[in-house]
Length: 233
Image 1 (cartoon, rainbow, N blue to C red):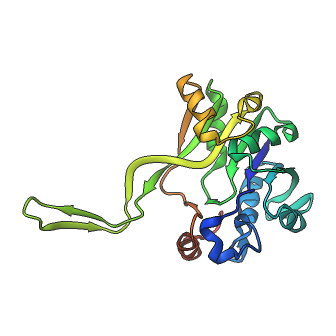
Image 2: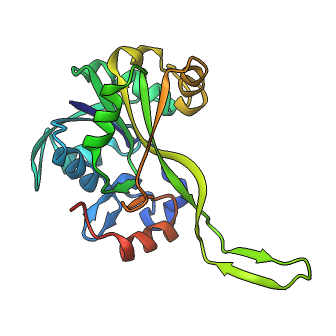
């Protein structure tokens, strides 16, 4: 099965780390770049071809990974879909579809660290009739939660707890023949996701909270991931 990784963004919120000298997907955690972790995770679950949707400092990424990247789980073929202008996540997928040859395709953001079992997402998607399946995770509050009684006494303080809300995990599985419906320019979350949800053609896969998941959006995310991340296995 093929995969598309969205790694063309500027990473403006993490500029203090990258200093505009390399893309966010190339930030290192535990001695390996985010993109290298993602390729290894995909290959562990028998994804043999990764299409990197690149724009900002695309040459830097291509120099690092070439056409075949050797992961601990075997080699993965790498192709490059190069944006000439900012297309948004939906436009990047639309552009990259010409590289896809499998019937279904994994789509993921280029800033995700996770170790959940991708085979379970694939099975969930294949067994369903829907055109797309998006992985969702329980939301962690970015702030401490304060429980207050009627007399203003604090009864409980929980530092950044897991909340009872599901958010998009930045990892999806779509039937390949739907990719031409992705916008040529625009965000997929604001377009095709909305359309498919209205058509009842979008399913959720709930990632078990026992697995690790984090989106690296800020220097603080990077610091915390460096402490928490134990690897894929």
